[in-house]
Amino acid sequence: MRVLFIGGTGNISAECARRAYEMGHEVMVLTRGKIEVPAAYTAIRGERHDAASMRAAADSAKPDVVINFIGYELADVELDCAAFAGRAGQYIFISSTTVHARPAPLPITEDAPIGNAFWEYARKKAQCEAWLVERWRAVRFPVTIVRPSHTYSKRWIPNAVASSNHAFAARLKGGKPVFVHDDGETPWTMTAAPDFAAGLCGLFGLEASLGEAVHITSDEVLTWNRIYHEIAEAFGAPAPDIRRIPTELVCNAAPNLIGTLKGDKAHPGIFDNSKIKRLVPGFACKKNFRNGIRESVEWLEQDHARWKMDPATNALIESVLSACERRNNFGSP
Image 1 (spheres, rainbow, N blue to C red):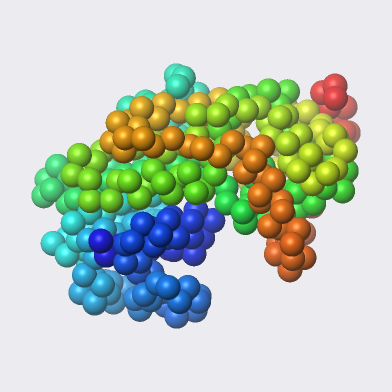
Image 2 (tube, one colour):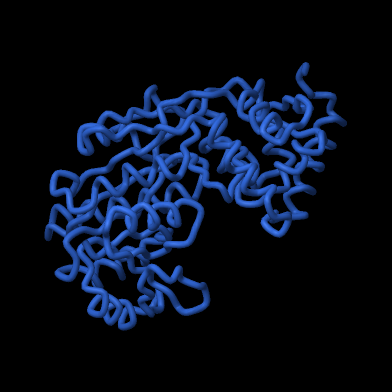
């Protein structure tokens, strides 16, 4: 199949593009020419937010499957529908499990209530989903909605503060204190990007997935305390110095964490994956977190240039620790 990635070089999408290529699909990546596209793929020039440019890209690519990893606004999917309706057999919208209301009944199924009161990102994803489902029902625009949860690749050392840079990881490696929301025992799911990719690629061209929303996550359930201990062990560091701080106090000290905590990570994240397993027989996440995070750490440590340090993230962690220390609200270690 001819598969066009809108966003094909990111944390999750790079692994999905690699998997698609290894399966024998022709991989195409939409680009403005500012990011290098791997030589094995075909670069399709196009301006993401320009209707005429996207129609021209669609005509050039002639895709069987389009996957949008970077749709965050309703205008994005409206433009895609105009560009690819009648030009692609399937449009896969990468949404998020955060669209579900929190707290949610466990395990969280695709039919669990939608409506995240705490996170604008999640509400925008839900708005995109609703519009695409209406287009499916009205004109049979061939959409499949895929909802990942906390998914990491070798580029990420995942955490509840900021997974896209390595400031939190550096603190764990160096034995500096970090914080966890509440008692750190909230159950959580971490999914390795190669496992997510296997599920996603299994949906290519699958008529039974059209008009459907599908979770793709691991079935392994961890706690945040366990996650941080596993990361420290992967670095060969001592047991982490974890300060346990109530979610409300964290959010008071760092309001920009309200969405990611109150709207997601402060609540149990356990998901029902029966639909993806039914649609893609034989699918299962094979990489547990202990092995996956060791691969990420090994990759990161091979080249110091791979470390992405964000001083703002480190400053945020310090500010939360300081604010809560003044209130004497640390939980017992």
